Image 1 (cartoon, rainbow, N blue to C red):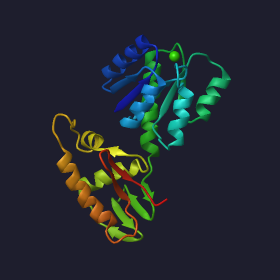
Image 2: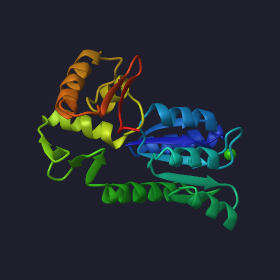
Image 3: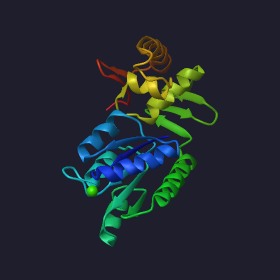
Image 4: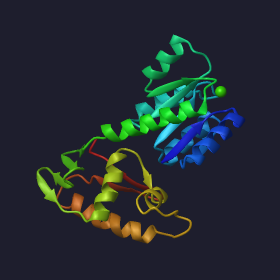
Length: 226
Ligand code: CA
């Protein structure tokens, strides 16, 4: 489980990182809203701990932008003051929970675990895009009613892309999250490209619109027409 901490108080951020790593979470720190936003766009996180009071782009701005982009990553906001306005604002902009500073680390850990559990329970069992349906329970896929057969790896790959429809996925993300290896240790570009070619053939051949698209020099995107 990967967690991002966006917090400008470096000491607090590092103390949280240490506690979370002790609980076997993989943790990254962003000290500004900009940095946080960059990491959120570049990598996959299972949960974000977001301080509201940040220099530059503040927590609310980061939160609003990521929800507008349809990123459903659970977010716990940290507020310095316990005012109704702050709470309402955070929850209103799409935070899943909030904690008032100062807080006890075990309290944060409990909230994180609760949110991650809730996230699993509420996960959609059918993913849809432009006439295509992927049933995560039966592992069946149809496009305009026509069944599509994928191998296990192709299914995993396509599920990853479909979960992030409308956003660009890099080869590095696929290597790390679908093949579970760091791109630097083992270059996987060829393996990924071979799988993407096969996947594209199965998903798009015979249809008017290609759902699986290559973004030259960057990676791939799965999206519908218009
Ligand atoms: Ca702060």
